[in-house]
Image (cartoon, rainbow, N blue to C red; front, side, top):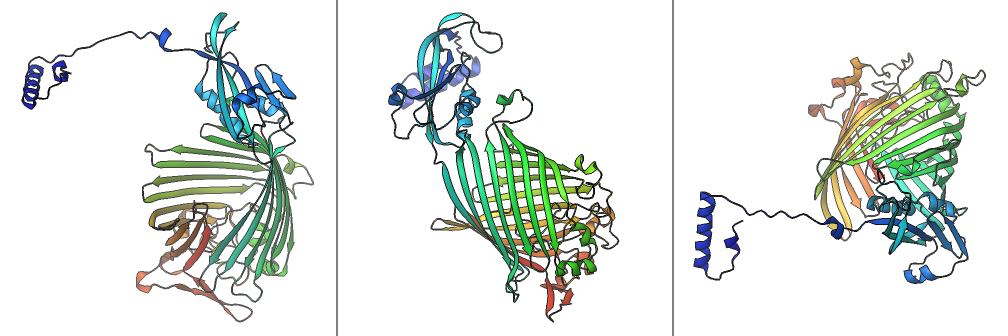
Length: 593
């Protein structure tokens, strides 16, 4: 910078002359004035060290902090530098102490400070966490300065005392959710309309240990809009979950406080499902496991997962067994004693408008219990793995989203009854509002097999392998009042297969020589109504490539375009004609992925 240019002048000619002279000097002899000064860190920075930590777990939102600090309390817990003050025994001392990351005598660290606030907030027992600090002078002794940044026998250091004011949340709450989904082959003659209602009761402070408990009652029905008896499926379930904010294990786990969050989960559930004329399924499930999070990495591990099922086979399913013998192996019920590991990661892309999500999951069942004689014909022995990747590229008025999914399960039992495939409640299905949208739910696959497509009775399909890719271009149309109206253009690609060969169901096994023939492709568009709190989605999709379409290797012919596949018009027992459409209209709640 030429200092002469900093001189103030109101004469424009004088200013032009100075600029011209400065330019000439810079070109002739470029120079710069550099001033180097040493900063006195001793006077510009003050080191603060963590002092006492006080919790006020029953603070009200309109309480004055200074008043709470000097008030007398009847219940005071204290250990090391942490103190809890209460008049009503709202919370025990242990959850507060275990989720405090600030340590007395350590150099103040902002990351640790916010980690403590987040940990207390995530306990769920408080609506609000406020913090105030008080500065004082104190003495520290016998502290190592090498690694921790603390002092060794130094007098008169600055200490910060932290006062946490916790506003309790409502202990009990009840909520209800109403869901509607429709899977149809035609608009007028739809297949199934699903209606479900969930009622959730929450307790945010069980046994005064900041344990979260939730009880969920779910009732749902599937209705046929073209049947004399509209009720096709009835489902009822009750589940209860305890979320305990610590790791409960038979051995001590070190370094648990290096995690951002951790908890133990205990779950019990029971369910009853009746599919009219086909089956009645009863289940009891219990699991014990852990969840923890570090940065963007979230883990879930259930070392013990027990699922007990009983199945009543009704005449409709028996008749389906006669026409499709492979279904008999899929609908054999046994017990599942497994362990499940899941990993989730959410991370941004190289650009700020890009977000990514990865999910990996694995389950192993029967490795120990299935080896006992007398139990191996009742306990499933299988391994199952899933992987999913999603990316969203959000722009101002549009977004590009895609999803890749792959899953495989292998039943390694040699039992002739339950050793053919995964149990049907563990198998993969395709179709519906969140999968291959050109096909109704459970109506795609297996591979390019025609067995289910030519059946007039039970048409559901279950597979041991699933591969799927979904792509969407989402864009806004208009905003009416507070309702955002959007649309999307999408394509779904994938299918499900069997892992083992079945003589009774040819072309259902995944083989590379038939992979291109087996792939299904659907394209479509939709309308989305975004009410901020929830989104209603109506998608229309067409089968561009249908593995069950015999002609043209499954591809649609533009010169011979048709809305209905006339290859599979089957006469049913009541004289009606069962038609297979080349399109589907899907009604769903929320985005598909």
